[in-house]
Image (cartoon, rainbow, N blue to C red; front, side, top):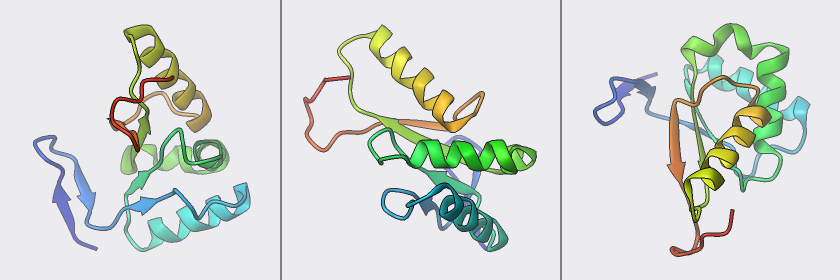
Length: 119
């Protein structure tokens, strides 16, 4: 697997990321898919609040076995635009809770319609 620096961050991400928008149908499927991605050298998991139960399934994988690889895995998650700081903080905390993580490596604001600001 090839790795490249992500922007100016210094993070060395695999050139392929594991996007989780549509593949996660169950906790077991998530764990098996993430395990295989890691075997192939993929070190970046990409999810979002709006991707169904994706964050919960990834959180289960971290709870069950991925926690020991946390320092080797980069996680990106996304939330929609928010009207204020507190709404954003609440959404971030909920993502952290669902992902079973203490921190998120890369955090994005994500919306299909710009200007949508409902939390």
